Length: 171
Picture (tube, rainbow, N blue to C red):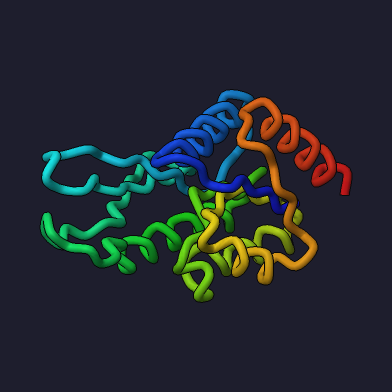
């Protein structure tokens, strides 16, 4: 009940996860989670990262502007935790799936969306996310034998979702 795709090119996996979420919504599924949308700005600056909360219309900025020459991590941990709080509230209200854009460094360190993964799985709610190669080892150590790698293919992921939802309803 824990599916993941390995991150591909810049923004490609964000778009894939976002498209899957939209497909599931279109089929009438109730979603908890967040998908990332990057907002391109001045070419001299890196994009702004926004999380769109799937249970409503809220958007939370999770990037900080550290300047054009900055090489440091731009993630705004306060923004991420605000998004996690909104998703946690949606999970409490009930959902068919928990979907979030990626298991990143915050999750590898035990923060971010990581606590919600366990909560969703304990409730029988399937979880879908992406993992980049740099965090794959930490993700697999956390997930133990629960994780299933999925191809970066929209139809294959939707089929996995249909199977997981059917199993969750039966259980």
